[in-house]
Image (cartoon, rainbow, N blue to C red):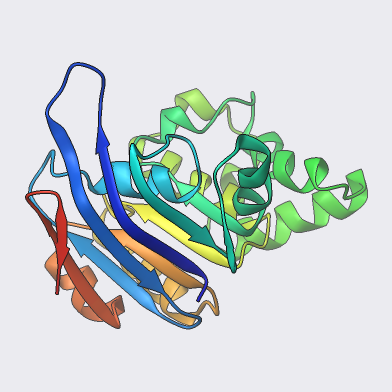
Length: 214
């Protein structure tokens, strides 16, 4: 099992419980859709999986090991790429090429290797024309595709996608759906888009009252 979240409980400081015993598993080759009302904890679930926040109870098991401490999640974040719901939370370099190269460089790739990865990933997503653009001047849909490119450049084993089609026009949504359907990575994605879920998901869970229901 790649990801195994067991009986997770979580509440933000001063708030009511968001998760009340949520559990899910992700196996190789699965594309798991998570649905649920706004504010039900879907984004929280993805952040717990990679250790950006910690549960008050329950276990996070990733790639065969229980993860508790920050240093134990470093490996998880290398192997599981999270695409945030808001691209502005993820993009911080001056240009698109620099943002996409950041991960490969941090993983020890040479500058030449990182440049080759940038060219390949941007071409695959159909956004090579954005290579030298300033990231904060991109449209919302363009930013979303660039954040996905930055994650794919790190060649993760698992993709965690938070509302990946938000802000995309029909042509880019079609391109994204086809790309994701052709990827070998297992993925968990949060989406309100029923058509997108229907085309991509191999399994679906609904987050309701703090628990995941099939």
